[in-house]
Every structure is written in C-alpha cells, then in structure tokens.
Amino acid sequence: MNRYLPLGAVLSAALLTPLAVAPASASTTPLSLARSAPASTTAAAKPAPIKGVAVYARYNRGYVVTRYEPGKGPTRLGVTPETGQFSASPDGRKIAWITGLGKVQVSAAGKVTTLAKGAGANAPCLTPVWSPDSAKVAFLPSSESDASPVAIAGAAGGGTRKAGTTMGVCHLAWSADGRYLAGYAGTTDGVYRLDLRARTSVRVKGVKLANHVQSLSPHGERVVVATLSPKDPGGDGGWPVWFRPTIVDTTTGAKVPIAVRGRLIGALYLPDGRLVVRVAGSGHNTLVVLDASGRQLQRLAEPAQARTQALLQIVR
Image 1 (cartoon, one colour):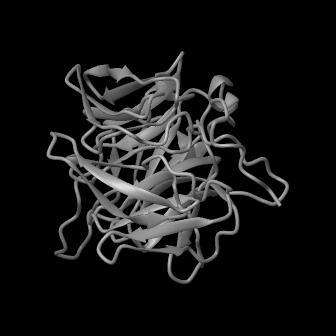
Image 2 (cartoon, rainbow, N blue to C red; image 1 turned 45 degrees about the horizontal axis):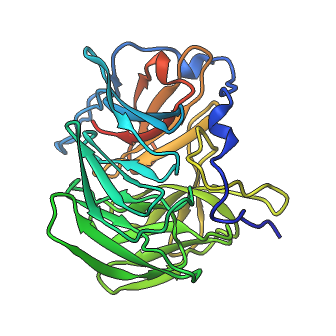
C-alpha cells in the first residue's frame, strides 16, 4: 500500500525539476487571443470567454507567486515561506500561507497580516485555501490526529471559527457555492469532502489513492484529483507543477471523461461550471475551456514564462 511521507518531510523535488512536455500538436496550436465556439442559435446567454488572467507559482527558496494578465505582463504577488503551505485567492490579488511557527498570514497589496496562530506547520500538504469570494481563509490547526479540525479566519480580521473535522486535510479546495471543502488524506488513502453546512465529512467514492486535489465543481458534485496506483510514490505533499487530472463524481464515484486531446497537466473549475483543462506544449501550454456537457468552447495560450510553473488560479 502506498503511504504518504511524514508530514514534516521536505518540499517536493518535483518543483525543482523542469517540466518535460510533449511537442505541441494541432490541438495545442498557440493562440494570442481567445477563440470562442460559434454563436449558439438558442437565446441562452453564454459566459464571456476567459482572457487568460491567471496565477502561477515557481519554487525559488520559497515559492514565487505571479499573476499574469494579457497586455500587462507578470505581476509578482509575493514570495511564500519554505514551508510550501500557501494558496492564491480566486481574485488573483492575495496570497495566504503558513509560517514555520504556525502563523496564518496573508499578503495583499504588499502588506502582510497575521490572521491566526497555531496552524499545523512545516507540512507541505497542509495548505490553506481561500473562500470563493476571497474574503476568508480555511486552514488546519495543529493536531496529532489524522482527522483534523478545520478553522476559518476572515482575511480582514474578525476572528477564527471552527468549521468541522475531516480526514481530507491535504491541498484543500473550496466549492464556488461556499458549501464544500475537499482534500486528500495525509496517508494518500482517499479524498474527503467536508460539508460546511452540516459539518460532516464523507469519503469520496471511486478514489482509492490520491496525492493532490486541485478543484471542486461549483456545487461540490465533482472533484479534480491526482490519483495514484498502489506502486506510485505518494510524494511529500508539495504543490505539483503538473499532474494528469482525473475528475470524479463525489456521490457515485464515477470517473468523468475529459474530451481534450494532448498531454493533460491539470484542470480547474470556474464558478459558472466551465472546466479549464491545461494541456502541455513545447513552447507554451494551452488552456482549453469546456462547458458543463464537455463541449469545447475556447482555446487560449498560456504565457511562455509560465510553462514550467504550477497553475494556482484562473481569475478570468
């Protein structure tokens, strides 16, 4: 049985290794501008195409977090501590991290604020996560149990409250409706979804082993994970530069197919239910946008500078 390394393990060497990518195929042709699908004949309103505003991270004695925006270029949001416990806000303007002393800190507009103390520290997989409105941060208080309490703090202050207990403590993702948190177990034995309204945690069917949770669908009915085979190494929980995404129905455990060609290296749900799939390329990666039925809506080239970086957020 594959086992996750001790929570105090060092940061993943994967982020120090250049990303090996397959040559771009016809399905990953560089595009300087978004290309939408043909206009529908129905009267239903379509969401605006994404513009490619996104947040990435690369390791350099801590993690350098950068926002890329077409026409403006990269903007550095900050550098996180060596703990590797960090996340970017959905609005792409703030970072939250855990220090080696267990402080929960937020960097916004160059100012660092401490929200809480006593978080589980020096464990790369115990990353905080931002609420969908970028106003709150959920984190794991220090605990000796595999099932850990989850706490939520206001990013502008206002105290901390307990939100429930879960076995899914690693790489938390928050659904756009605000109801669910999902994470994988520190042992890599499965993914758990915490219902913040009912304060109950349930293991997701269909996932035996996993070492990353990247995204939840808007109402928590699907989760994007990095699954493992029993022979795969679990890793130490650092942010992966890339992984082949698997989408699982959180109720039935059924695998949801991703109808995109090429080497898939990640996927994120947008608040409106669209899925953005990251596809590797030799000069740059490509973002492919699918609607809820899996139909392709758009293709967009990522910045070449971000090709070997971890994708944290699609802002718009």
